[in-house]
Image (cartoon, rainbow, N blue to C red):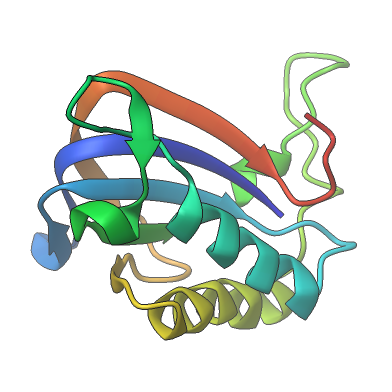
Length: 149
């Protein structure tokens, strides 16, 4: 499971002109599910997102987590994170899990994060979404439960 994580001042997700998720301070995670991912990856991704210390403390150092700052986690499904662009000009998505596998695992990330004590907002699976955000820092990180990077 992979995620592009951005520390945000605010973020929102729209589908067909309707806001389906909105948040203030927190992390926005674009989450992709691979063919080899399972429930353990969802739990690990949630744990990492909730406890990732990338918010500034009183000395300006990144020492605080979502829990420490009372932030919100935004989770948006993003199968294109498994796009392979090494050959040709068109990405291959052979390593991306199909929707029947990916949707319950993205949902499992949400459930696990909520169980760890954070508020979560989401996009809407299998729709074209308009994601808006104000990146604070900017801070953007890549996570991979298979530790590929």
